[in-house]
View 1 (cartoon, rainbow, N blue to C red):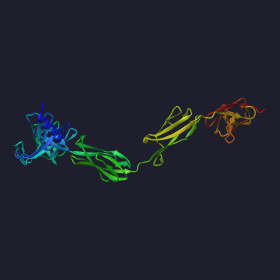
View 2: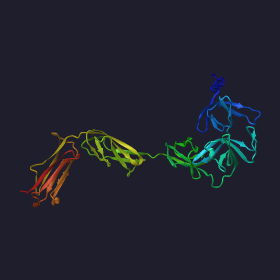
View 3: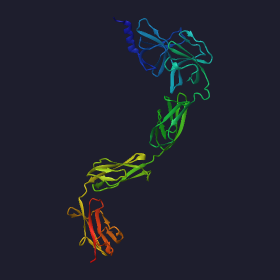
View 4: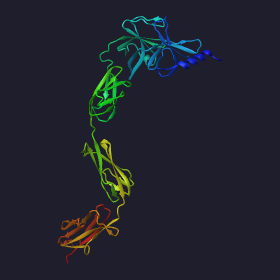
Length: 454
């Protein structure tokens, strides 16, 4: 069956409807606003019309475009299509602490020095007191006699509380903050020095006594925006060298803290690996890293090492490298104290197949009271290598006769001369001579017998 009233109201709601929200829960409702100008009532009120059963009720705190309204009644119609409620726009804010939370509650305040009527029922005047209307919700329901709150730039004490029509009527009187009570404080958590170019999120802590308030709202201020800027959330950009004051103000209680901060040039840290970019599989280098702070070498820096491909090369905690096969590898050094890294890219080639031999005149013997010169040779296959790195000689002398046998190396000639003293007890003793290249890719040994002079 066609319902003209329902259809008409739905059309008007669609054409003129505005979306409002419940303060508690943020539930959206679509309503029609009307201005009531009733000469039989003391106050003009704003009214809303809304679908019956939509959830709006008397005593509800509603928000619309950053404004707050209290529904002071709910008038039902016999048609069950829509309801009507008169509104008071809030004109004050209650601020108080519940547990560790700051409560900010929009309210409507009557001044008892003016007799105001509510639905044609007058309220008695009480000297020095204020009547506050607020939504009945889990927060305001906890308020009790002698509780305190801030409103209209005053510290107020609850002297009476009445619940009616789903509204709480609070009777409050101006009070004096007691010594040691309701002490509000703010402290900024920040260092005294930051580096130019840094961006840091600062924190401010709000307290009531020893209780930390977890939802306090702050305003931030920099005394010198040329040195550092700060946004509404405490995010600071340090722009240049200098000194400035940073201030955080707990807006609802006008309590602040200020901290002086110096902005300085950042320390320049550097790390460099000392090594070559090419090695052979026969090389066994020990890499080092130079750590510097503002150009000055730091001798006690903690360095860690890593190899990008341990199938090509490994490196231990001291920087000692072992090459396993030809390939590409990157060594990484980390300066632990400052988390600074340096890298060295290395190409590893296969070592040349070097062999070595020892040449000498005659037999592998040395006569007492005589000497012998021996020459080192390095070969790549059948070709003697003339640019081989310096040879290394090792002479193992007969036990007990070490002082009677001397050796002298000539690196330019690749030779070693072994000299034996005139001691008949040396006859029949043996000297072991070992030759290897400086990369330790090849080695050879020679047994030399000491024989008589004749």
